[in-house]
Amino acid sequence: MRELSQLIDVENPAWPEIRETLDASPVSVEWLPPDSDLGTASILQLQVTARSYLGAVVLNCGGLLVDDGWLRVFGSPMSGAAHGVPGLSRVNQFPETFDSVWRPETGLTVAHDVLGGVFTLNGAAPASADRPGVPGEVIYFAPDSLRWEALGVSHSTWLAWLVSGALDEFYADLRWPGWKKEVRALNSSQGLSMFPPLWSAEGRQDISATSRRAVPMRELLCVARDTCRQFDGDDPGFLGAV
Image (cartoon, rainbow, N blue to C red; front, side):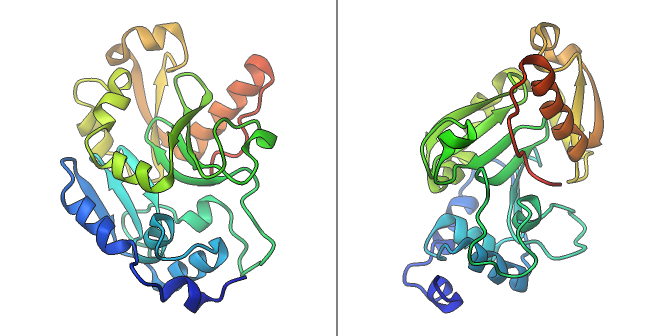
């Protein structure tokens, strides 16, 4: 186990590089203020250094709202802040006090999108959790297929990709005219439920014709998991606690 000073007091911390990337982003990125106590507790539990993108974000950032809030990247937010984005520790149910043997059971949930999509950083044994990809790879639970997809990138590459403008292509079939206005009206604990659902042939045929309503993100994730179980008995596993 590494002490906190070994994790924080490092040469070449990643945060200045991340800030440069965020400032140069062609899409809107809101950087939320951090809670320093929560940040240090989180980086200690994760046992990653501030030289890594993951460590730098959790230590220096309360979270990121990317592309007008379409995507929420989790950090260490101040308690009771108006934005309402949950922290990485809460989403992944970190122990209340440091536990040297605790690890995320199936990987670390690092972001949610407003449709109930989940970005997770694979743990040491993704195959044992029926997850695709290799250890340390970011994977995506797609709300239109209700399946995990390997993205083939590390956490640092994924974070740079998010703010590069690539989300337009990634979500090309899942956005509709006027989506920005609807997303901006949500608070950060809400997502958009669609009918017909995204995974149905009707929902995919013309997403602009779907009926959309704001629901708690918790509800959106629970419905997705329950639907997977009902359809083929496959459980996608933990999607984040919000």
